[in-house]
Image (cartoon, rainbow, N blue to C red):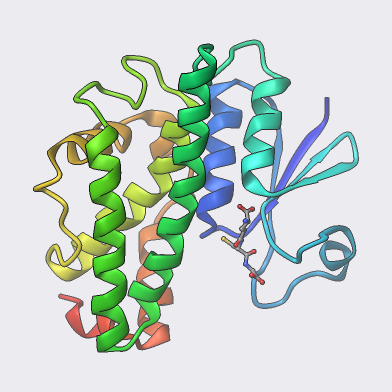
Length: 219
Ligand SMILES: N[C@@H](CCC(=O)N[C@@H](CS)C(=O)NCC(=O)O)C(=O)O
């Protein structure tokens, strides 16, 4: 099957799909488009105007959670737990993970008040994940699953922000997810799921938004 993933370089939802495509060793073309100046052909094929889009033999698949399930469906290896309850729980937490990005967006764009309320909301959610994460390497034990690919982009952005700001979003006290994050960020397919120096691009992107967080940047 011919696969083409269309995205922005900074999109965490596409990053998850990239991790899974590589984990499943599926050949695909990666087409980064400019978020400021969307090409007309993209506007015509994207129902929501958002990325990622996956073109599979010229059929358009949108919504990252659907894309990741599709990648699993066409692969030889199943990266979801086979037990239906465990699988449902994974899917619930995957769905929950997308709400972390709403808080993260407010954290990186908001004024001082918004920064603190969204930081609190983010940490309330991280604490809920801490409560269900055991001390195994990955979410379901020793093997990398879809849910690990879903959380890796969040952990990558938190680690960048902590580097830019002297740990303003440190979650060291959440020991289970801290260890999970450290393990995930060491995995090659995670490290290689973004273009080189994307942390610099993220830094500039946040700085341009002039939210409270940019006043916390260290040189
Ligand atoms: N629920 C969507 C969210 C996708 C999304 O928000 N993508 C962002 C980039 S990371 C986007 O395309 N934003 C452009 C816009 O909202 O116009 C998914 O998971 O695919």
